Image 1 (cartoon, rainbow, N blue to C red):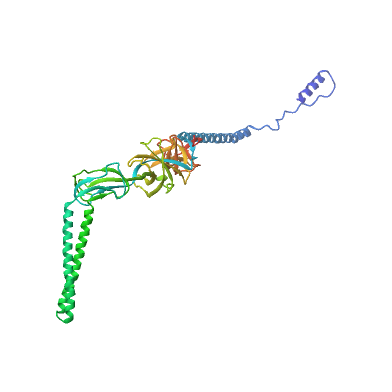
Image 2 (cartoon, rainbow, N blue to C red):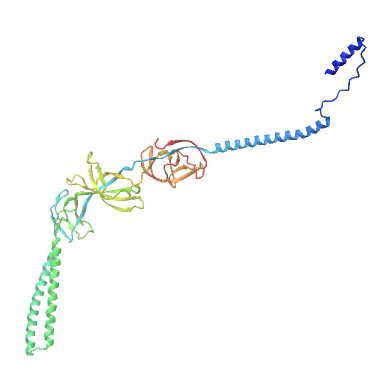
Length: 416
């Protein structure tokens, strides 16, 4: 840029007639030092364009991979079952168990006749309180009377024969001393004496047997109690034993103490032990409660009912409780294992029994079989099958299976 200015100045000086010498012509312009030739520029483009294309392809591939991953994760998330989980809460270590029971007399027995005959009289009707050994009825059995008379006559005959055999044997023992009789005759009379003695003993036993049979003509109460049934009338034909029509004469029950039988569910069989206190209510005595201890248990679980038979003895000194009454029996039990409590909508009732769906650490479903306790309506006791930290699915659908992935939405308390 300075050179054209110098040239203009020199021209001006020449045109003004200055006598200064003429300046040399300017040098030809030189290209900039950094300018490239067309060949270099083309080489540069050949190097830059592939790099740009490679970078563009790399960016595109990464963007596509990120998009595919995002779509896959979104698809996987959408494919998962959205569930809400709850956690079980601890229940009460003490439980009140109420089960139905049947009231029975402490002792109950049908009264039968030991001999056959006709009923002459009865002395106790239904509702009568009797003592042990009290006369209940009298039976006419003439056959037994006649047999007894004959047996006594046979006894008298045997005793007479025994007396004669005794005198004869003694006489022969004296005669043998003077050799008036043979030893064989003495032995025969001694053996006859022994035979007659045995005959007397047999006749005496027969008389005692028939006397006992005659004693059965009178029917006595086997224990203290109340007559709950009378199934005979005067003149009825009485059959001996406990078979046939008209066999049972009376039914007597000891109601001073009542036996109450209940079937306790298997899950409560552990704390149910002898001495546990129970209270009882009956429909016929509204507002009244009777108490008594557990007297005994069967120590066995029924194969069909899965319950344990338990007996509670309830004192009944006033006779207010009646055999056969229906009762509601309440137990206050101290549980050996504290149960857990879950909402009722967490239980799946399927062919394998009650189950709950638990979400494991991999967010997959685990179906676990549980043992149920008391049902409180909105909540239910779980006696076994889960632990308190387990995440239990609330209101699970029926199509959940083991290993199924799920998406947990929120957590709640099991008691709410």
